[in-house]
Amino acid sequence: MDIEILKQAVMDSRDGITISDNCRDDNPLIFVNPAFERMTGYSLEESININCRYLQGDDREQPELEVVHHAIANGEYCLVVLRNYRKDGTMFWNELSISPIHDEAGAVSNFIGIQKDVTSRVILQQQLSDEIHSLEKTKSHLEQLSIKDGLTGVYNRRFFDSQFEIQYKIACRNSEALTLIMIDVDDFKSFNDIYGHQAGDEALIGVANGLSKSFQRGSDFVARYGGEEFVILSSGMTMDQSSVYVNSLCQRVRDLRIAHSSSRTGYLTISIGFSVHQFTPTNTSNLLLAQADKALYLAKERGRNQCVGF
Image (cartoon, rainbow, N blue to C red; front, side, top):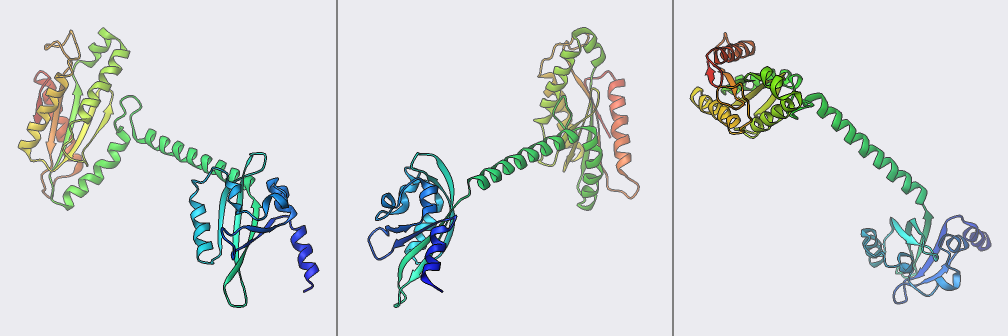
């Protein structure tokens, strides 16, 4: 091909083209085309006989520069995107590819660099990335809303219903005890009547937080079952261990010292009914739920502020 055609192609290219001399110290530029001059604002005279690192200015903390240095040291091709700076100080994103040119002996005599201003592309990618991140956060937030109670922040009834069967089957498969604990805040209607619904909401949040800090194992969880009722699902406890645990829950709520003038103790309390799964062919998750519900009814019937278990 005619050398003049190649020269014209280089000079008319829309991409910046540079050639550096690998046989000289610091690999200085020996040629830049007009597109490079327009892209950077530096003239041919200002650009040659110096290393092209001047395009990064003081912005040297770019991991991609190590990729370039490694490629030059090993006579290899590389493609990177760098933050470069024009003569007027404005930053642009430069997609740089460098390729080695070998002499007759096979040694790398020069590197040819192709420079593309990809600022618009990088900005678009960043915007898309930000939008994707925002959408992921929104999705995560919506997912949390679908399984968390909006007031107390603990799991909701929907989550409990879905997890109850799963945890029950796991417990059966592993021959592991499963304790279902149903909790009711005592005299909560009168609490609302006396102190107002805002205070009632704050009391439920306090109770939920107290219950959340009491778990025995990572798989245990508390859910708001409805109104002033909560439920806890816990695995691996015997009947005696469950009894000690639920009594500690009652004491934990007493220790909150939430004043309740119509309560016999003077403070907000809870009643608890619990049932421990026994592995027999006739037992089902529904039976476990029914037993815990019945136990809760007996705890309230017997005067509240206590625990009953089956």
